Length: 148
Image 1 (spheres, rainbow, N blue to C red):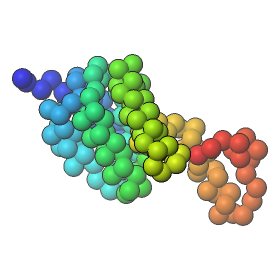
Image 2 (cartoon, rainbow, N blue to C red):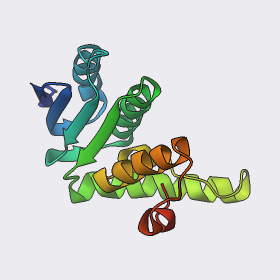
Image 3 (cartoon, helix red, strand yellow):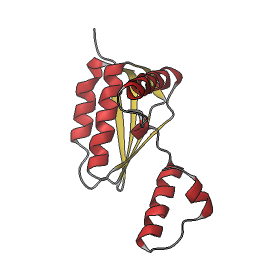
């Protein structure tokens, strides 16, 4: 079977905008590998617009999580937006399964897809909180209430 998965990439200064399209499964992993290898250290932010991903299986989700963790490790922010119903359902299922395992073994924690669910508001709050800590000043009241 032929892989219909593709990723359109656009660069805007230090920001990369990715638009994956098609079915994100095991056949799509090499396409994702190629795109990831092209993202260098000059990139500060990656926005991944998932609006055209009509299907994602666990293999695709695991590849996306690995991509997010690799970006995070080198200090590049990732924002995944416009996730359709089916891929969101797979993300929810993986988190639910992880929650059940943590209850049995490790206690409560963040689900494996937490790195994909960050919002721009979360990022801005984290930056403001870090600046407040560095400057040894109080957090803004609404930022203190928001878990980041």
